[in-house]
Length: 169
Image (spheres, helix red, strand yellow):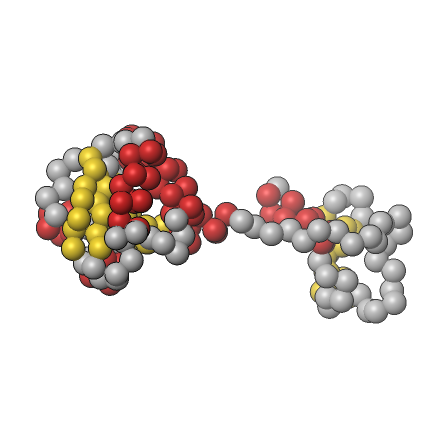
């Protein structure tokens, strides 16, 4: 059903010059590939006015917060830009509460700070190195050095104050 909806949306918004176009076939609502040549009408009764392009914006949130692992840890924190690191686990309720806040901050401070997450279950070496005993824990790094930490699901204003302290310095 979802795939059929995707095909239907694609058929309605596909570029006019595309070679393969999916058009509704018959009364069953099924789709069949159809070759369309320039000058051939799309279908009877169809509005041919330009339609807005469909753009998926779900991947923007994923690009803002990076995932840190044992393999890329030094690379993540080694830059001169302040780095906000959240230590979390999928089973942790408070971690799930603070996750949207971290995502928002990553978007708001894009280019000023780098945000990443460390899953404590999958990356125990990093968690042990910094003595993470409670999650969520947020650490700020600058120049590869740990500068400050905040433990627990704190309000957005607390994290904003923490970030603002290290952006200008």
